[in-house]
Image 1 (cartoon, rainbow, N blue to C red):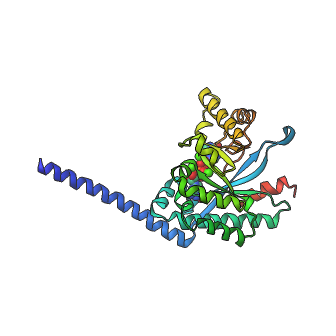
Image 2: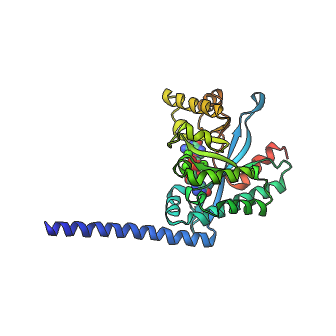
Image 3: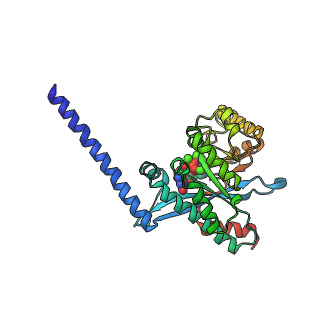
Amino acid sequence: AKDTGRNRYQFYTEELTQRAQERLMTESRLRQAIRDKAFVLHYQPIYTKGEDGGAPSIFSCECLIRWQQDDGSLIYPDLFIPCAEETGLIIPIGEWVLDHACAQLAEWDARLPDNTLSMAVNISARHFCDANFVMTVHEVLKRHAIAPARLIIEITENAVMDRMDIAIPTLETLVRTGVRIALDDFGTGHSSLAKLKTLPIHALKIDREFVKDIPDSTDDMQLAASIIRMAQGLHLQTVAEGVETQEQYDFLAQAGCDKFQGYLLSRPVTAEKIYTLLAASAEL
Ligand code: C2E
Ligand code: CA
Ligand code: CA
Ligand code: CA
C-alpha cells in the first residue's frame, strides 16, 4: 500500500511539474512577447440601429488582442489571457492595449472628418483593481488627446461584483472624469439588482450565451428581453454580443436593444479595414 501511495505521489508531482513547466513556458514567452510588442489589436465595430429603417451605423469599436507568432499565425486571447492574469503580466499587457487603442483612435481622427467614434477596451479584474489603473487611463488619454467620453472600459460583471470594495471607488473616479463603463458578459455572473442599481456604469453587454440560441430557445428570448427591460429601468444602454443572424438582430431590436455586435454585422477586423468602413460611411 505504501508503494502505491508513493507511486501515486510521484505520478502526481510529475504531472504537476509538467503543468508548471508548461505554464512557465507560456509565462516566459509572454514576457518576451511584451518586450517585443508581439501583440496586435483587431477591432470589431458595434452598431446602433439605423435611423428610420436605414442601415445600422458604427457607434464604437471593441479592441480584441491577438498574439502574433514568429510564423505569422495569431494566438487568440482565450489561450493566453488566463496565464497573463495568473502571473500579473496582464498589467503590462493591458497598458499596451490601452495605449495602442488610443493611439489608433488618434490616428483615425487625423484621417477622418468626424471624430466621434468610441473605443471599447477589455480590462481584466486584476488590472482594474490595481492601485495605478486610474492614473494609467488618464495618462494614456492625455498622451493621445482623446476625450475621456470616447473611452469605454469593459469589465466583467463578476470582476465588479466580487470586489465591490475596490471596484466602486475606481468606477466612481473613472466616471467622474468622463470615462464610460460597460459591464461585460452580463447575465453569466452573480449580480443582484440591489448591487447593480448602485453601480456607476453606462451599459450592459448581453453575453452571447443568451443570444446564440435565439430564436430556437424561447427561454433565452425571454431572458434577453428581460435583461433589456431591466437595463431600461436602470437607464442603462444595452449591447447584444454575438449577433450572428438577422432573426437574432430583429428580435433584439424589437425588444429594445440599443447596440449590436456580431458576425452578422462584422467580424473583428484590422485597423485598416475599420478605417475603410469609417471612410465609406463618412463618404470620403
Ligand atoms: P469578450 O469580451 O466577450 O469578446 C467577445 C468575443 O466574441 C471575441 O472573441 C469576439 O471575436 C467574439 N465574437 C464577436 N462576435 C461574435 C459572433 O457573432 N459569434 C461568435 N461566435 N463570436 C463572436 P475573442 O477576440 O477571441 O476574445 C475572447 C475574450 O478574450 C474576450 O471576450 C475578452 O474576455 C478577452 N479579451 C480580448 N481582448 C482582450 C484584451 O485586450 N484584454 C483582456 N483583458 N481581455 C481580452
Ligand atoms: Ca468585451
Ligand atoms: Ca462575452
Ligand atoms: Ca469575456
